[in-house]
Image (cartoon, rainbow, N blue to C red):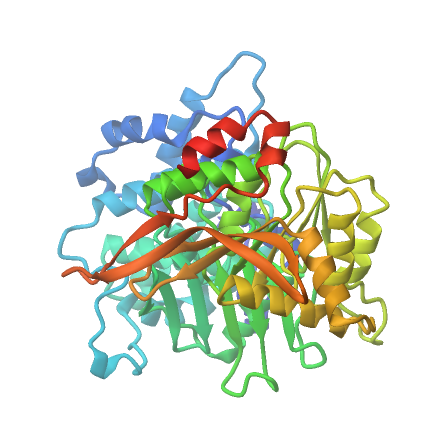
Length: 549
């Protein structure tokens, strides 16, 4: 038998690790990222879905292997691709075919099939889920599959073609060993094998689910997700700690970082920009832990946030004016409150002609402007040298002629240089900070300046902060799971040794509805903002007054 047009010679058992544990660079390079935004020049997914549904109805989908389905869809995609002067992008084509396959398989599943995340009783929430039929069969088939594969040939195949080859081999092994799997289960098995070879294993299904905002892997048998602001225990599990480590290694290796006993914690990112934190033994006592903060593929704007009741339309208008008027804005909130999402939304008001420099530990900001320079910190090497801190990057950014500096998160001595930049002509700079209230954010900034080893009187430090900042926006993930902007606070100046502020907007909780959602109002103070002269400079003073009153 041939695989990838080459004769297949049996491979020793040890080669299993080469495809399912530590992938070759070529195989890693085939991993896919969904989203029509990447499919330049290709017909859109929305255009092709009704065509594919008509050509391949649900009844027919249930009779096809995944490989056969991939071949049919690939033919339809190429049929509808433009022909005049168009050269297909293989990566874009693979992405589109994969997305259409998943849509067809999801629609074709019978109603009685259990959902991916069934409700878990409280009494069993801490218990590991048993292996299902697909995972049990995978353990039996995987070794035999690797013996029959030519890994070097497989690494050169497109995902759709590789799926066809793997599906054929799986069918052979299932027949030979008389393993009881129906057509749907065989397709799920092929998907699981491909995810292990090309992606992030069992996490691929969670990464593809747009309703999930956070994924938390606490060892091989406990994977939590966050949906609509609430945590849920899933039925996803890994084989063992080594399997979790293999996935962690794939994630960090793609951005040139490492995770091992000498460097047991790491911040990284996925190809779609999602933020990842990994910590392993000996720091993580119960096994490797992976935390993934996903970002919506949909572009979130202040208007969309207002429609979702994250803030009021008046608050959205004021933040638009603040972003356009080059105010220095600090976004404050707790972990997972939506600080980065709000930062991305406000940044969309920055003029297209401005030069923006972003500084982050792990690059995750998704700015839409054409002139953006993204800087990322670097950890120390094995010898303990070569580290580039955020403070060094802030200092360097000042030499890069930026119009605006955006700091992903202020959490140390870089606060000194950031405030200095805000005070020396770099207006319109943005940053986030961990704090529960606007006043606490000011206190934290003051403490960070002390961490920098600068010996200044408290009044001088507070004067530096009050003259640098214009606005503090407080974000909170409330107990009903909804993220809301609870305060928009303006920094006014100094009175004696105290920084004075005034509330422009505040969210008042009034009670709780029968559905568990909090009832409240976004209230305007009606006060005249101190930044009105800046708004007038940009011709926005009238809109600001009308909004506040």
